[in-house]
Length: 123
Image (cartoon, rainbow, N blue to C red; front, top):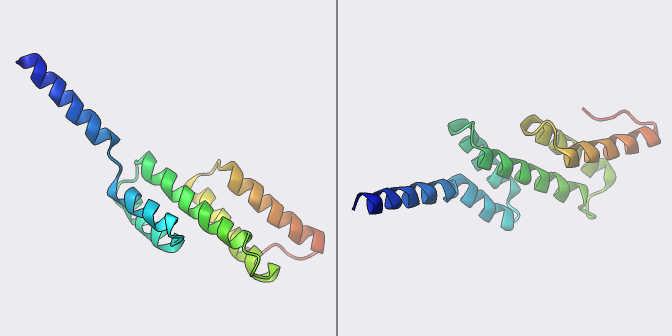
Protein backbone atom coordinates (compact mmCIF):
# COMPACT_ATOMS: atom_id res chain seq x y z
CA UNK A 1 0.00 0.00 0.00
CA UNK A 2 2.81 2.40 0.90
CA UNK A 3 4.58 1.65 -2.38
CA UNK A 4 1.41 2.38 -4.34
CA UNK A 5 0.97 5.70 -2.53
CA UNK A 6 4.61 6.63 -3.22
CA UNK A 7 4.25 5.81 -6.92
CA UNK A 8 1.04 7.86 -7.16
CA UNK A 9 2.71 10.79 -5.43
CA UNK A 10 5.57 10.60 -7.89
CA UNK A 11 3.21 10.44 -10.88
CA UNK A 12 1.25 13.48 -9.70
CA UNK A 13 4.45 15.42 -9.01
CA UNK A 14 5.81 14.59 -12.46
CA UNK A 15 2.53 15.55 -14.12
CA UNK A 16 2.50 18.91 -12.38
CA UNK A 17 6.06 19.58 -13.53
CA UNK A 18 5.16 18.77 -17.12
CA UNK A 19 2.01 20.89 -17.14
CA UNK A 20 2.53 24.08 -19.09
CA UNK A 21 2.16 27.40 -17.36
CA UNK A 22 -1.27 28.89 -18.21
CA UNK A 23 0.39 32.08 -19.46
CA UNK A 24 2.52 30.02 -21.84
CA UNK A 25 -0.51 28.10 -23.08
CA UNK A 26 -2.36 31.34 -23.75
CA UNK A 27 0.67 32.93 -25.39
CA UNK A 28 1.06 29.95 -27.73
CA UNK A 29 -2.56 30.45 -28.83
CA UNK A 30 -1.92 34.15 -29.38
CA UNK A 31 1.23 33.40 -31.37
CA UNK A 32 -0.63 30.93 -33.56
CA UNK A 33 -3.14 33.71 -34.30
CA UNK A 34 -0.26 36.16 -34.91
CA UNK A 35 -1.38 38.32 -31.98
CA UNK A 36 2.20 39.05 -30.96
CA UNK A 37 1.50 42.03 -28.71
CA UNK A 38 -1.10 40.11 -26.70
CA UNK A 39 1.28 37.18 -26.27
CA UNK A 40 4.14 39.47 -25.23
CA UNK A 41 2.01 41.43 -22.75
CA UNK A 42 0.75 38.25 -21.09
CA UNK A 43 4.22 36.75 -20.88
CA UNK A 44 5.76 39.92 -19.47
CA UNK A 45 3.16 39.88 -16.70
CA UNK A 46 3.84 36.18 -16.10
CA UNK A 47 7.58 36.91 -15.93
CA UNK A 48 7.00 39.45 -13.16
CA UNK A 49 4.95 36.90 -11.24
CA UNK A 50 7.40 34.05 -11.86
CA UNK A 51 10.80 35.51 -12.84
CA UNK A 52 12.68 32.20 -12.60
CA UNK A 53 10.48 30.27 -15.04
CA UNK A 54 12.59 29.11 -17.97
CA UNK A 55 9.43 28.10 -19.82
CA UNK A 56 7.96 31.60 -19.62
CA UNK A 57 11.28 33.20 -20.59
CA UNK A 58 11.73 30.92 -23.60
CA UNK A 59 8.20 31.60 -24.79
CA UNK A 60 8.68 35.34 -24.32
CA UNK A 61 11.83 35.20 -26.46
CA UNK A 62 9.90 33.19 -29.06
CA UNK A 63 7.12 35.81 -29.09
CA UNK A 64 9.51 38.75 -29.31
CA UNK A 65 11.38 37.11 -32.18
CA UNK A 66 8.14 36.30 -33.98
CA UNK A 67 7.04 39.94 -33.74
CA UNK A 68 10.42 41.24 -34.92
CA UNK A 69 10.50 38.78 -37.83
CA UNK A 70 6.93 39.66 -38.82
CA UNK A 71 8.04 43.29 -39.13
CA UNK A 72 11.38 42.60 -40.79
CA UNK A 73 9.97 40.31 -43.46
CA UNK A 74 6.74 42.20 -44.13
CA UNK A 75 7.00 43.05 -47.82
CA UNK A 76 4.12 45.54 -47.53
CA UNK A 77 6.22 47.78 -45.28
CA UNK A 78 8.79 50.10 -46.84
CA UNK A 79 12.35 49.76 -45.48
CA UNK A 80 12.20 53.15 -43.74
CA UNK A 81 9.26 51.87 -41.70
CA UNK A 82 10.25 48.30 -41.00
CA UNK A 83 13.97 48.49 -40.23
CA UNK A 84 13.79 50.84 -37.22
CA UNK A 85 10.81 48.96 -35.75
CA UNK A 86 12.35 45.53 -36.35
CA UNK A 87 15.64 46.74 -34.87
CA UNK A 88 13.89 47.88 -31.67
CA UNK A 89 12.14 44.53 -31.38
CA UNK A 90 15.30 42.48 -31.94
CA UNK A 91 17.02 44.58 -29.28
CA UNK A 92 14.15 43.81 -26.92
CA UNK A 93 14.88 40.09 -27.41
CA UNK A 94 18.39 40.72 -26.07
CA UNK A 95 16.98 42.28 -22.90
CA UNK A 96 15.46 38.88 -22.12
CA UNK A 97 18.10 36.61 -23.70
CA UNK A 98 21.46 38.38 -24.00
CA UNK A 99 22.97 35.52 -25.99
CA UNK A 100 20.22 35.06 -28.58
CA UNK A 101 22.11 34.48 -31.83
CA UNK A 102 19.15 35.07 -34.14
CA UNK A 103 18.49 38.50 -32.65
CA UNK A 104 22.19 39.38 -32.76
CA UNK A 105 22.46 38.37 -36.41
CA UNK A 106 19.33 40.29 -37.36
CA UNK A 107 20.54 43.40 -35.53
CA UNK A 108 23.85 43.13 -37.35
CA UNK A 109 22.08 42.79 -40.70
CA UNK A 110 19.95 45.88 -40.12
CA UNK A 111 22.87 47.91 -38.82
CA UNK A 112 24.93 46.91 -41.88
CA UNK A 113 22.10 48.06 -44.15
CA UNK A 114 22.17 51.49 -42.49
CA UNK A 115 25.96 51.63 -42.67
CA UNK A 116 25.94 50.73 -46.38
CA UNK A 117 23.53 53.60 -47.03
CA UNK A 118 25.67 55.99 -44.99
CA UNK A 119 22.78 56.64 -42.62
CA UNK A 120 22.81 56.76 -38.82
CA UNK A 121 21.67 53.60 -37.07
CA UNK A 122 18.38 54.18 -35.22
CA UNK A 123 18.51 53.88 -31.47
